[in-house]
Image (cartoon, rainbow, N blue to C red; front, side):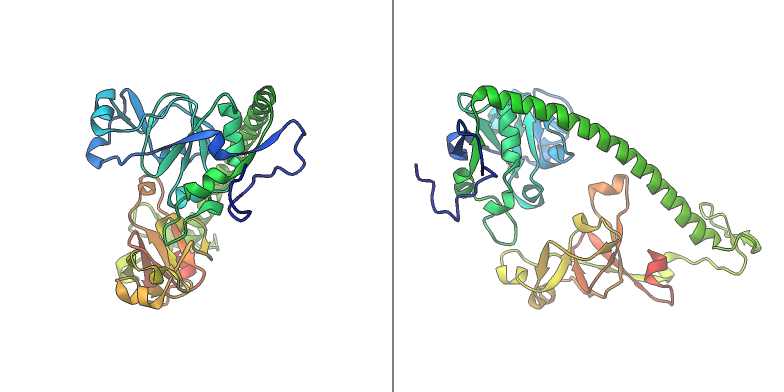
Length: 346
């Protein structure tokens, strides 16, 4: 059977498959259910008949899901015309960063999903849901990108993708083995994360001591006048942050002009303020894009801080720019007014 040209026929690692296996297009194995718009005024219910899943619910590396941050009733789902996703479907992001992260999750209960996601409903006569979950993880969604400033999956190409299909009893065996082995790996990773958290706390402690007490434990100290700082070396001074730097805001150029997003200037979004130094960004914009809005190109070494994001509930992300870059409206740059070095401020 024909599935299109070789360039569009992305195949997930099927070289050397067993003779009883087949290379089968996604379209023959799954039915796609699209998500629905979820108006803000409908959100916020923490219990109900149906979990209403968003990309944020499936982003933690889990493989099974039965709960969500938001719920809706059957009556509301019918009134709004929400599509019902049956249990044991594979959920995935289809737009933007969520698509690029390639999260795949099996829902264990019926649910609704928002319009940045889609569900792959397996034909259980041909493929088990559990095996389908792992098989779809082999496909990189960015290979099926529509192009344009905002990545989105091209389902025409996606449906033509091929995955290896063993016999059903082999599928069950493979999924069971993977569930067992991956659970052990997840447990080991959890232990490593706890160790990393301990090391992160040690880093913060070292930074606090160096920045508030200095490196010489023998120097005379004096009260700083700031509770959280405590005593500081007597030859140091304290100052308000507003006296030390200017805050510079960013912006997002219009996405209607594709040319704005085909430039060479790195453009930082709040999601990219993760590492100590930002060296690469997902998007690059043109000089015309910078001129079209209120974003600015900040010099290399500028500290930037996230000022608008859900992550601020528990973390304030700060990074240094590894090159001259522009920023979006969720981020502010800190341009020093004095001889204070950006690295020390960071």
